[in-house]
Structures are given as C-alpha cells and as structure tokens.
Image (cartoon, rainbow over all chains, first blue to last red; front, side):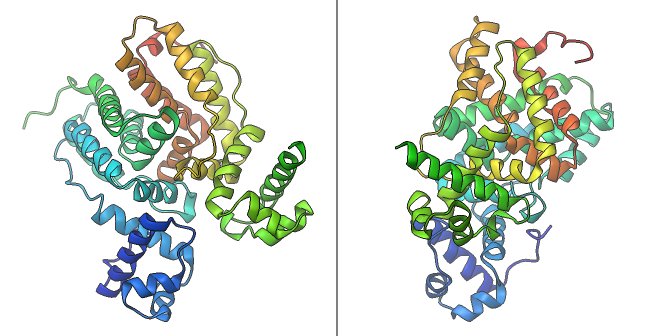
Amino acid sequence: MSAVAAEPSATQEAILSAYAELIEEVGTDDVSFRLIALRAGVGERTVFRHYPTRVDLLLATAAWIEATIFSRQESESIFDVPIAIREAIEAYDRRPELAHVVAETAMRGVNGSEPAPQRAHLDAMLRREVPALDDAERRDIVAALCHLDSSATWVTMRRELGMSGRDIADAATWSAEAILDPIRDLGAPAT
Amino acid sequence: MDESLDTRSVILAGAAKLLRQNTFEDVSYLELAELAEVSERTVYRRFPTRSHLLEALGRWLEEEYFPIPEFHTVDEFRDAVRARFRAYDAEPAFAFVAARGAALSPTGEESPATFTAAIIAMLETTAPTLNRRDALRAASAARYFASPMFWARMRTGFEMSADEVYRAFDVAMVRVLPAAQRPSRAGS
C-alpha cells in the first residue's frame, strides 16, 4: 500500500517530523503547507513537490509516526505479542494526538494506510510455533491480534470507556492473552 | 433550538448524499451549504473544522444507518453485531466514515455511550460474579471488537466478508467473554 514507501529522504523526514510536531500543537486541520514548510526549513514548493495533496502528506506522516515514534521491536514468539501490545499502548498514551492520527488513517479503506501491518509476521510466527492450526483458525487469531496491536485499541478504550492508559494496557494485554491461551498447549514441533 | 438541530441534521444528510459519489475529502463546505440551503458560514459555525464534521457525520451515520437493536443476552449481542457487520458491508462508504470518525481525537462533543452502556449491562446480568477488573477488560474488548473499526480493518487488511468478520469477532468473543462460552444458537 501507499504507506509502505521507501525510506524518506532527509528533506522528506524534515517535512514529516515538522507536520507531526504541528499536529501535536494545533491538530491536523489547521496546519497550512506554509507553516509546515517554515517549520521544516524548506520552501513551500518543496513540500508540494513531495506531497501534492494534504492526504498524501497525512498518510506519509502517519507511516513515519508508526515507523519512528511508535516503532517496536519485532516479537520473536507469538506468545510475546501481549508484551509488545502493552508497550505499544504505553507509547500511544504518551503521544495521544499522534495515536489518533495513526488510528484514523488506518480506517480509510483502500485510500488509507496499511490497516494490519503485522499480519505477515504474526502469520509466520503462528505457522512455526503452532503448526496444528488450520488456515481459518490461524487467520482469525492473526486478525484479533492485529486489531488489538493498534492505536485504535487505545482510542476506543479511552473514548468509549474513559479508561486510563494503565487500564487500557492491562485490558489489551489481557485480551491478547485470552486470544492465545487456547493454543498455548497445542504443542510446538520438535526442534 | 429545534431549528438549530434541524440545520445540523440537514447538513449531515447532505454530506451523506455527497459521500455516495465522493470521498469525505472531496465533500466541500460550499456544496453542503447549497444542499442544506444555508450560508457557508452557518456550516462553518456548526462544524468549525473538518474533524468536527467527520466526527459528527460518523456518529450521525451510525445512528441513521446502523442503529443497534436492544440486546440483553450474549446471544442477542452477537446477533446485533452480525447484523451491524452486514449493514456495514451494504454501505461500506458510510461504515468507513463511521470508523474514521470514531478514531479521531474528540472535538469535545458528548459521545453517546449507549452501546458501551448496553455491553456493560449485558455483562452484569450474564456474568454477575465477574470481578470489576475482568468485567472492564471484557467490556472494553467486546466494545472494541464490535466496532466499525474492526469491520474496517478486517475488510481492508484481511479482505473479509461481513460473515467472515463476524466469525473473527465471535472467535475473539468466545475467548474474552467468559459468559460467551455457552454454545451459540444453532443455525442463527
């Protein structure tokens, strides 16, 4: 998808981080390209050349935020995923405005950012560690974990249930454990 | 007051109409003003930023197109969610906007928590012995997996149909809702 682009250049990085800063200061709506250019130390035309529309810029910024500010270590085992989710929720809680941006861009359908970026990695870990699962079972577990391991978890639990970051991290980790519990003893292959 | 509420609904209904042909990004305040027969300034007064508009529109679409039937038991809850996912599949443009609106940083409008309250009430009656912390965990997971966000992620990231999304939802619920571990109604 569009968000999985090549590594941004230094100029692009300056633009994306400037926009991310401004989002935290004033929100996504009221930021002009002029202001972004000024903050990034580039000309307004440079911003337009790299990101012709506001949507292009927003999607690239969301991908950059995910890759840098909310970056995470890849889990080595599927059973480490609940811990990774806890760390991710704590990171979202520290940068709430950016967490909202990442959540919203993932909900745009084919015009948005990749909604399940960890899918292939989770699928590979499950194939290796719990080979007894059939394709449908594995897909449903990957689906549930992808959904839990996203900023939308933090958004929903905060907005709809008024939960604190600590309670959200607890609930998301607990849910991920509950998803994994039934397959814990299915047995890994002899290695 | 009535009149102002009407203006708001007329503007949102106009936005929904435009969403049938355009993405939310292409919906202009000028077109909304023309459709609602009000001035552009009135539209800006109601929805100062596009975030305000998106959040209000998402909520309005959920109420108008995806109303949640009453539910008291886990089975009724599951039926309600299955019906919702099918309704999202029938109106995907509206469902994606509902998912986006729910993901935004809140613009300060009161959020109607009826669906959340209904899930909490359902858990209290079906699993009265659940301790407070587990009840919160289960309620929050149920609320999250029943959301348009889950449908949106499953549809785009996993290419699932409404019934497949429901299946994935149900698999998650059987695991996170202790009270859901009863056999579900056959053939429903």
